[in-house]
Length: 366
Ligand code: NAD
Image 1 (cartoon, rainbow, N blue to C red):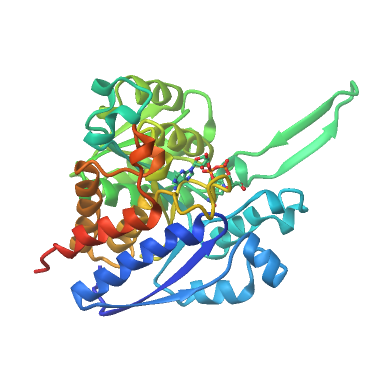
Image 2: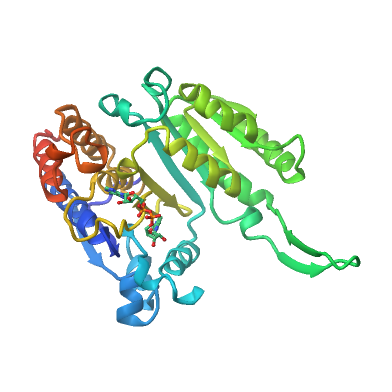
């Protein structure tokens, strides 16, 4: 990726704990900028409930403009009980769906990395999950979620529903290419997940995967049926490195894979468009139950910044440094309430952020 010296990040804190965790992540961005000498400008925008209250819509035009002129987007979380009874188009989640569509975000990347010192947070046996380091790539804009939907009454009077599962070859190819590129940077193994024994769309998926795979002879491609993958993920998750799959299978498998690590406050994600543009956000929601208390775990958002530095800004060393800083803080035994065995020792959001910054400060740039 061509390295620039000046980047703009659109920051959309959103609702609930969003502003609290994003504030810590922005401090990390600022420190990376200072240490690397790269200029990273930050522009703030509103999305979700706060935008409904202020602008009358969950995704104001002004927010879209900010994101479209940025190199990447950092998002906190949206939603909360205040807006739960609103009609669909005035719900915070409509802002999320809208921004994904408007920015053409078609590849959702969710890493599941089991950090050694958090192994007890998983509901699986430590020996099964220790060392897990995988990433699920989910196709985000096609498949059954976006195909034509119908409801009608059959001749016998019974109600019938239809959801069309449709994929164009080009949609499959672009997500496969993202996955092969990713696998190339990791352990050079890619598992493509489908249901080719039953679904025609999966048979096309497999054919395209094979064709695209010919361009990546250094990456070992294998195919796995989705039901088998679901079992293998809990039986022997360490066998996986990069998994790629279609929208609905990916929705389910990425949640399953993420939960191998057991701690929602640690899970980062990226949603990528063509080129290097992407939106980065923690997997968790706005956690209204703890919002405003200063106790939310900022690490998922900080790790999302790590993904942004690597995938959209091409600052791989900075990304490594951010991840290393997070792991060092955990290794030293520091915990927020969601991952602490002893809750009385739990740190607050800002305290945890400060520890990561202190570790990152030690990073010696080349
Ligand atoms: P949630 O992820 O917000 O919270 C689930 C549980 O995990 C809560 O007990 C919460 O306190 C805890 N938790 C979540 N993040 C945490 C963190 N960083 N540190 C410590 N604890 C954390 O899910 P939910 O309660 O089902 O949803 C709350 C709201 O968030 C809803 O309005 C929902 O629609 C929305 N939501 C938004 C997104 C998003 O913005 N991408 C994703 C999921 C849910």
